[in-house]
Image (cartoon, rainbow, N blue to C red; front, side, top):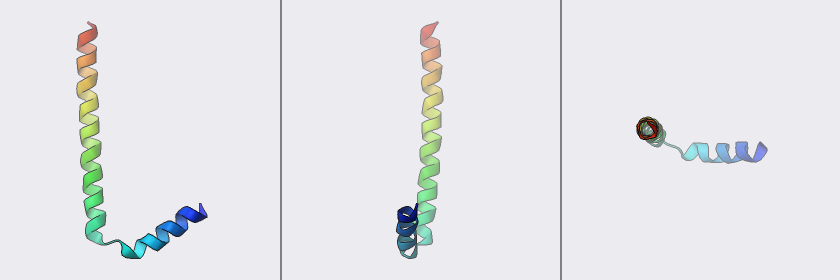
Length: 50
């Protein structure tokens, strides 16, 4: 825990708000795409089993 905290605190001054915003947007898009693909695959698997 101490190593992770020290790493985070040493990286913190080098982060810019644009980088954080870009990371949040990319993570949101990735989660949405992953969820959508999971639903589509679930639909096709269910349809194929019948």
